[in-house]
Image 1 (cartoon, rainbow, N blue to C red):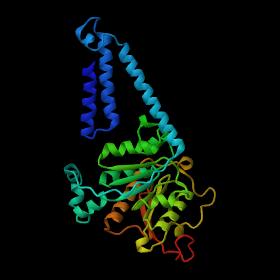
Image 2 (image 1 turned 90 degrees about the vertical axis):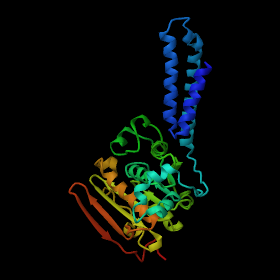
Image 3 (image 1 turned 180 degrees about the vertical axis):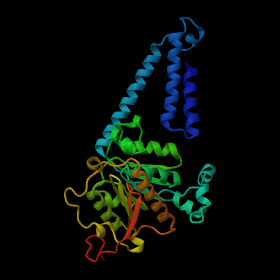
Image 4 (image 1 turned 60 degrees about the vertical axis):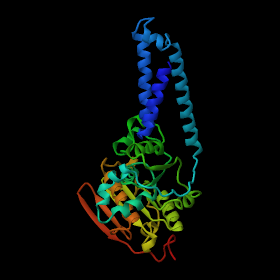
Length: 345
């Protein structure tokens, strides 16, 4: 029996050293456990291998039952955590050197004249908050994580549902029912184990918005409601944090940037009042083409990288409108409103 426990420890330790996600390591140990039970079922009583594993499957079944209880207890804690909606604010991430594998992974960025080694360093030292781990948040998070952003914060109070999987590519079928922030964390860590992920399993509200925004260098708003977008804009203006916002519906998407460093218009300059009833529908009400969030969410990631690195021209002071149905794009420029109730001097 000791040999089995040693093998399990070796699997866990080796997986941890290689950066294998916990879920994959648990699966490997689970397969080892199934193999032990299979030996007890297949081999006859008195067989040396069976005797070496305890001669009876009773003890192993007891161990399995205890493991199930531990998993149930852990899920219970996650449920309590989801209900209590904690928010933890962490100190700024310390600067770290690049591992060799990180340099190799970032090679295509480093050879870009507009990013280079210095720009990649800035990405690694940056902290980005993404509001919403849904249609827009999914591609934005995945591309920012892959790009080498040092710290990604995710705030969302929803659970993964089957209807999400048509477009929210960061989630998987086996994570239906899991809080989206934890599902997104699993996907991000599997893609980039060097990434630090901060999860806030709750809704963004006025009590925490400004404090939370102040912890980050940049915020992306991928939510689908006017009230949350308006709150994000107020918090961004109050804290001087650049904000990339976007919206999608059916076949259409729009994206813009509020960057305090260039004194352009804020979201409230463009949308000072909520839309009238019936003029703005959510994806649930109006539907959405599956790849559309990928198009606009990827644009959000591009704008974020340009803002963090300090290169190119961003969508600050303008809005890009994409019509996926008729393959058309147009760009509208806005000026700051003198009577804006949010960003007026």
